[in-house]
Image 1 (cartoon, rainbow, N blue to C red):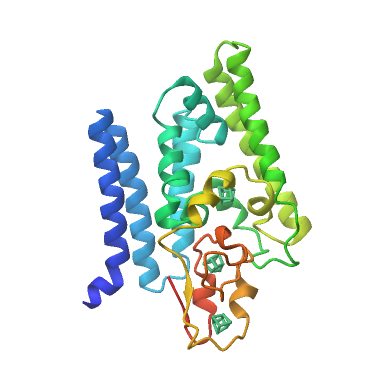
Image 2 (cartoon, rainbow, N blue to C red):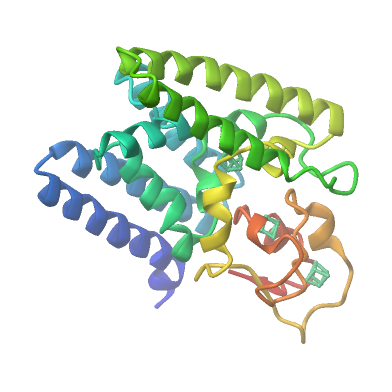
Amino acid sequence: MAFWKRYGGSLVMLAVFGSIAVGFWLAMDNLFYLLNFGYIGGSIALGLALYANRYPHARRVVQLLVGLYMLVYLGIFCQENMQIEGFWYYLFSGVFEAATIHYVVAKIAGPLLFGRGWCGYACWTAMVLDLLPYKRPAAPRKNWGFVRYIVFALSLLFVGALFVLRIADKETILFRSFLVGNALYYAVGIGLAVALGDNRAFCKYICPVTVFLKPASRYALLRVRVDGERCISCGMCKKVCPMDVDVTDNSRDRLNGTECILCMECVEHCPVKAIKL
Ligand code: SF4
Ligand code: SF4
Ligand code: SF4
């Protein structure tokens, strides 16, 4: 029983990602999917096991294992554009693989199960932003969320134009846009974090991927909940939340509810242990 309590989350993750890995391997007849989803699921399971054993940097370990794998191995060595432009490219090409599968699993359907776990544990942009010292937002959230829709539309227009204008060698352009896009994301993300005193400012205002992530994460199975009987209304959970979530409201309509990245900061800092996943 104690073993299940401690390692149940890891085993569930292994089962979920194992099923996805085997399912895509057999369906696509491609060993890559077995290795890819096996590696990602194994990294998340390891992180959960470390967390269960009170290792304080468990989330960072998963972020680095998955983020570096996707950025360096998939993005740079394999030249798979996993940015949003890559998703549009494969979608318009009618190819259901690589970026399209990644988006469906991690960012479109997956959030129904694990919310924005992608943002807390796997994103290679946040992997770098979370190294910065502004872990708690220095000021109230700004009303700049509309910018993400502009960036989203621009990414769609950019890839759409490659097809409409019948530009040759789109693969090379996509790879270059992956390199330039990531450099820009890091530059803007770090600049905003320093200017606003908030590591996650880029996630809150600029990132176009949130347009996919937010709708399904509203209905996520995995979400933090507060035991109202225990809560002493100290406000600590809201103070430490990097995404400005109103943790004490358990409803699906809670303020910034679709922003939760499951980082567990609120759970760790609640003085009466009133918050649970
Ligand atoms: S909001 Fe965007 S940049 Fe931030 S963690 Fe999520 S996917 Fe990454
Ligand atoms: S930190 Fe815990 S006790 Fe304090 S307001 Fe949040 S849930 Fe309640
Ligand atoms: S502190 Fe709590 S509510 Fe805020 S993002 Fe992390 S897990 Fe979600």
